[in-house]
Amino acid sequence: MAHRVNVATGWMFGLGAIALSGVGVYLGRVHRLNSWDALLDPARPVVLIGERVLEPLTYPAFYAASVAYTCGLAVVYVLVRRLSVLRVDEALLD
Image (cartoon, rainbow, N blue to C red):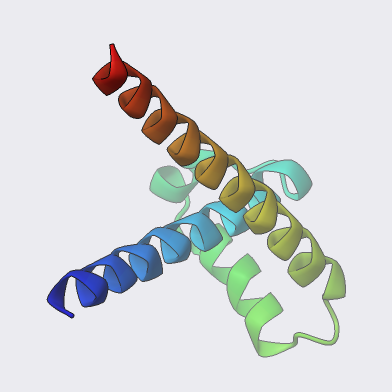
């Protein structure tokens, strides 16, 4: 049971990080922000995200794009994870 709880917690944190990455991809692709903008002008990304969270019906593209980017990143993550497990299994067979 403890192993399953740890695995579930790991997946929750992992998917949360992937979801935040999806929002970051949206901000970079649509609003042309990069990581330096968060350091040099931290209010801008906060305001952009805050507007979209407080008025969700006004910004449906934000949610659609963020969910799409999150799903894409999650699929890539799962595929890479599965392929790495296959590589380990193949190495054990040799």
